[in-house]
Length: 462
Image 1 (cartoon, rainbow, N blue to C red):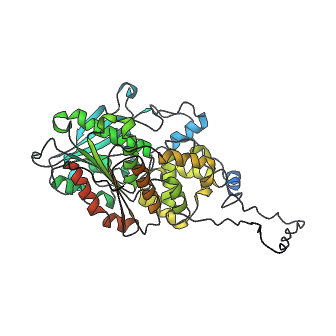
Image 2 (image 1 turned 90 degrees about the vertical axis):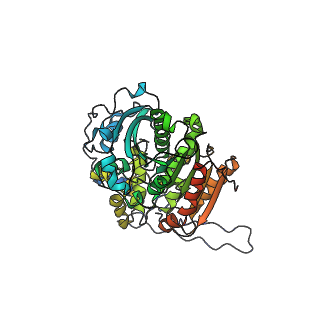
Image 3 (image 1 turned 180 degrees about the vertical axis):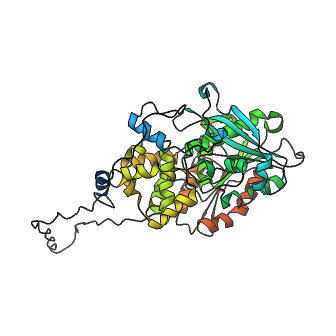
C-alpha cells in the first residue's frame, strides 16, 4: 500500500568545469499572503497539528474494565485509551473472560477445553472425528501472562503410521481486529465472519485426508493484535505445548509442521524465530515451517502498502500492533483516536480494508510529521523484524515474483538471513502477485511440509 513520496533534492554540481548557474531567487514575501509551505519531512505538512486543533479528543472512560490488565508504567490517559481500543466482547466467555491467576500458570498450561464438533462441521466440510477447542496460558509482547485459544481437529480412524499422529499447525491469515474474525470463533459458532482463506487452500482437508491432526491457533491473542509477530509466535508455540501436555499418549512425541501465508506467515515467522528461546523443548518436535507471501519486514511494507488501495489493511495492521505496543497509541492524533475507539475496532479485513479506496496515507493518523521514516518507526521495524534470530526448524519460503503489496524483497532477505545463520532453507520465487502466488506456490510448499511430517530430512538450498 505504498504511495511513494518523491522528495525534491537540490544538489550542487561539484567537480565540474564552468561557472555554476545562479541560484533561484527566493519567493517574495508579500503582505497578507501565507509563507510558502515547507514540504520537507512530511507528506502532509501541518496536517497533524490542524487535526488536533480542530478535532477534540474522543471521550474515554477513565475507569479500567474489570479484570483487564493495564500496562503499569503507562500514564492514566494512555492506559484508558488502550482499554478503549481493545476488541469488544462477543458474548462467549471462552474468548471474552480474562482468567484469574494467570501468573500462577506456566505457558501452555490449559485453562479450559470444550468439544465443538457439531458446529465445526459447517467449516471443515468433510467427515472428521472431533474438534476440541482449548484455552491456555501464553505470554504477551511485554512478557506478561496472557491467554490464547486454538482448535484441534482430529481425523477419522486410528493413526497407522510410524510414531504418533503428526499435526499440521495451520496458521491462517486471520487479518481481523474483532474476535468474531478468528477461526476459533467461527468454528464454535458457525461461519460468521469467515474468510475465503479459511477454506482455500484446503490445508485442513488435505491434512485430515493424510491422517494428520490439524491445530488452528487464534494467534492474534485476546487483544486481537493483528500483524504483531511476538504475540502470534507465543500463541502458536503455547498451543503446541498445550496439545502435547493434554494428550501425551496421542501427541506427546508427534511431529508438528507449521504453515502460513500472508498474515499467517507473520505468525509463523514469529513462531520459528522464538522457538529456540521461548519453547526450546519443542525444537525437536517442530520439524519444519512453510511460509508464503511473507510480510517479514514492516519497513518494506511501509513503502508498499501506505497511501494506496491497500492503505486500509496497512492502517489496520498498525492499529493491531498498537494494541500490544502502546507507545504507538501515544502517537495517534485525535482523528485516529476517534476511529480506533469506534466500531471499526471490531471489523475484519474485508471491512477496514475497504477504506483503502480513499488511499489515505498513515500520516493523517499521526500526531508528528513523517511517521513512517522517523526513528520511532525504525525502532518498531527492528522489533517486529526480529533480525538475527535463528529459526530452530527448517524453512520453506516462497513469494510471488510480481508482488507489489508484499514485495519479494522481504522474503528473500529472510531466506538469506536464515541461510547465513545455518538454517536448512529453501526459497521459491513463484509466478503472480499476492493472490495468484498463493495458488502457484502452494502445491510445492505443502508437499515439502508433508515430507517433513513423514520424517524425511529437510533439503538445504542455501
